[in-house]
Length: 197
Image 1 (cartoon, rainbow, N blue to C red):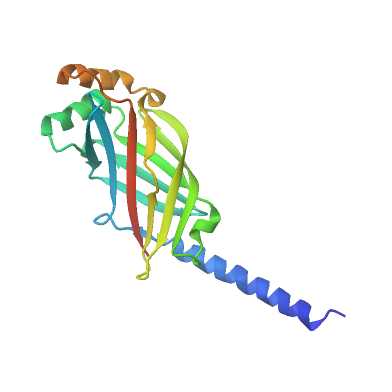
Image 2 (image 1 turned 90 degrees about the vertical axis):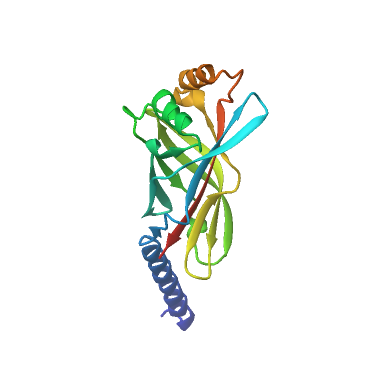
């Protein structure tokens, strides 16, 4: 005959599983707050001049099971200089053929728990850009706010190597038309994604 302690243990395990399931179910309903969210990247020219740019049109969805999926409309690039925006669209991103950059961010399961306010984790980003898909490691931070919002961001910039995505010819074309000596081919990307329950 099994002891009372055995049944207590089973009951606690079932309760824990139910709470975990409810937490994931709530997480799956998160919606991106576009007004508070942002995606930026930096470019460095002539080795010393660094500028920060952004994308104005993007969407990210929490798929459940610690996976986020997103798409960036590359035509929404904003460098604060209209002619440079157009050059990036046509000469670098080739938006006529590849209008979006798509990514899938996977974080460890413990990052999605409700126990800690801030969790720093090693994550993976599967990025598709210019028709090429690569998986890149990155350090991510998941923050649970008191108002129920969750913020997913990178602890350090994600480094995207243009050569890995066959973008070096585009960078060289931009360098030539702008009369620059050099444009860095490794581009730091930062994101700050705010989700509401």
